[in-house]
Amino acid sequence: YDSPYDAFTNYMNILGDFISRVDALYPVEIENEELNSLLTTIKNQGEEIEKLQKELDKYKKKAAKKTAAE
Image (cartoon, rainbow, N blue to C red; front, top):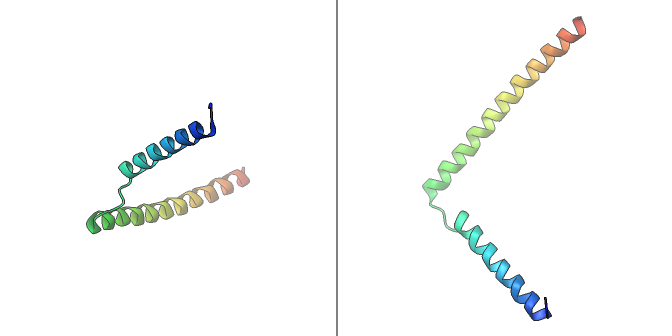
C-alpha cells in the first residue's frame, strides 16, 4: 500500500465485510424454539456418536481377538 492510511482503510473494509458475512450466517438473535431444536439435535448427535464409538470398540476387540487367534 502507498501509505499506512491506505493499509488501515483496506484492513477496516475487510474487517467490516467479514463481520457482515458472519452476521448473515449466524444471526445475533435466535428464537427459543429454534435454539431448543438445535440443542436437541446436538444432544441426539452426541448420543449417536457415543453409541457408534461403543460399537466400534466392540468390533476392534473382536478383530484383535481374531488376529491373535490366527
